[in-house]
Each structure stands twice: as C-alpha cells, then as structure tokens.
Length: 284
Image (cartoon, rainbow, N blue to C red):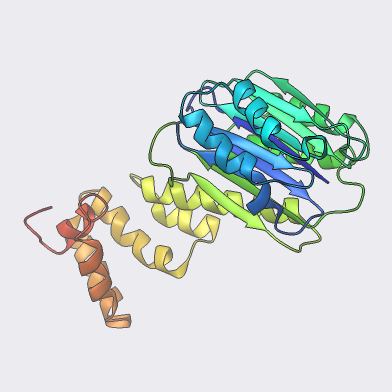
C-alpha cells in the first residue's frame, strides 16, 4: 500500500526515512528514526511496534537483521508486513511478507533500503534505489528523488494521498530532528513534500547563516519574523552594531512587542548571543 526508503548519508551520518502512500497519515505510521541509532519503515497493514521497538533494539546494540527477526517472531501476522531497517552504521535488513499485496518487494544497497507494496510493478523499488544513488545534495532531497522515481515508475496503483520525510542527525538526543514534515489528504503529496522540505532546509540555513539572511529570507519566502530580523542579524554578522541598532529601533517603532521577543531570545545561552550584543548585554 506504500513505497518507502530508509537511508544513511555517508558524509554527515544523518539517517532518514521517506514514504508516500494512498493511505492517510502514512508519514506518522511508517517513518521512524532516532539520532545515532537508525531508521525504520514499517508498512503494509502497518504495525508501529516495528518502528518503536525496532529502534529500541537497535539502540541496545542489536544488528538490523536480528532486530527484525525478533519482531517478526513476536508478530502474529508477519506475512502481512513489509519492513525496512537501517542502523547508524548503514547496515540494512528487510522483509516483505508473502501476503503483501503485489506488486511487492524490496531492494537494498550501500546505506539504503527501499521497499514497496501494492504498486504497479517491481520497477518501483528498483527505481528508488537507482535514484537515491544518483542524487546529490542533502539527504532529505536525495530521499525525495527516490520517491519521485517510485512515482514515475508507477507508484501506488490506487493513487496518492499522503507522505512524510524524517531525517535525524548522526548523534544526539532521541527527540532531535533535522527534518520532520508530513503531508495529508493531497492530490500532489510529492510536490507538497518537496515544498515543505525545501522550506525546512531554508529555515535551517537561515538559522546557521553567517551572512546573507535577507536574500535567503526573500528567495525562500520565509516567515514575517525572519523577514523582519534578517537585516538586523546581517548587520550584526558584518560587525556593524550601530546599523543593527538603528534597524532595531525602526522595527520597534513599527511593532513595540518585538522588544519583549528580543529580551526573551537574548536569554538563550547560544541562540541569544547576537541579541545580547544588539541590546548591549555584557554577557554577549
């Protein structure tokens, strides 16, 4: 009922999952990932225990094949399930139950595993792997390339509705995310996913920018907040504190409530450093 891919970025160590299906809320059900641990896609009469418990087993040190085997052994309906496992080392394991609706199958490569069921043909999962390996750029964009290839090869023969992309860092807390976006009840879920992923990457770049926030905020169509603060932060990045304070005064004249915002952000030990400089806080 779904096609998905789990993958690891060899350069950054990021781990990710991407999925599209005619089934509503598929991004929430299928895609599971944990920083520094692994990623799981659980689909076809989805049993979320494969995601939740699978990541626990990987975190405890189980190899993907062993974790998957243990979960299938405890499953009363393993032949209905389709699952892809990936750990932080890039090792994979997959299972396509004999009762999964055709066309159904899976394929894996170096640091990735693609699986699909209830799709037009076996070309779907093969196309995903080929597209992922050929793509360049951020892991989330490479995952999207795989989904686009699956759709071009026929996709879910019932149609399309929902999808999701989750990417987690190479290390960090269990709740950390690089990308976590979903689309529901859409006639064009892959187009919608790409728009959201590109927007998420733009916000991430804005937060990390050393300069050029104004151009980035405008070109990516970021929020009014980011549009308002971009010239101030650009001036601070360039070392022109006087210009930053002039721009800040203009901003406050338009909307005085930004003063409380600035004071709150300035209390953050890391993110608040530029605003402490702006406000003349000696902790800057």
